[in-house]
Image 1 (cartoon, rainbow, N blue to C red):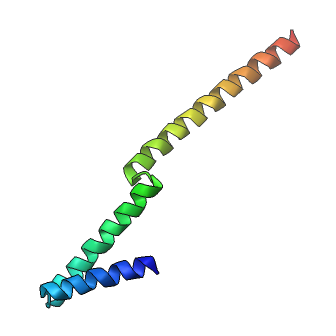
Image 2 (spheres, helix red, strand yellow):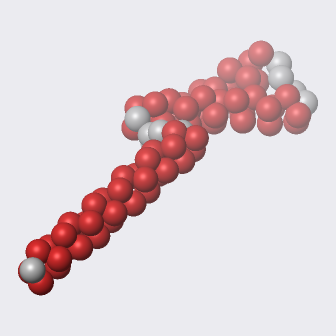
Image 3 (tube, rainbow, N blue to C red):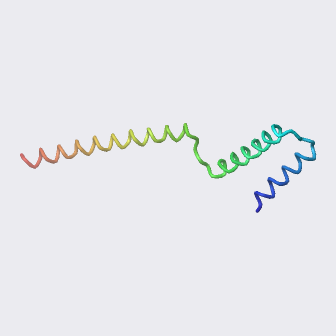
Length: 83
């Protein structure tokens, strides 16, 4: 309800200012919705796509390192038992 009231208030301001053409109205609506989206994303502290990709690569590299260390550890344990 709060968000719909916000949008209605913004639309009322647009009509008061005399924005009549559909292109102006649609571009203004898009700007309003984008700013609202940005506010929500900022509040939720969501990372951007670029940051997500970097973090995903870092996690993948760490997982690979862990697998390598586990295989080295297993090889050492097997060779120690045979001796």
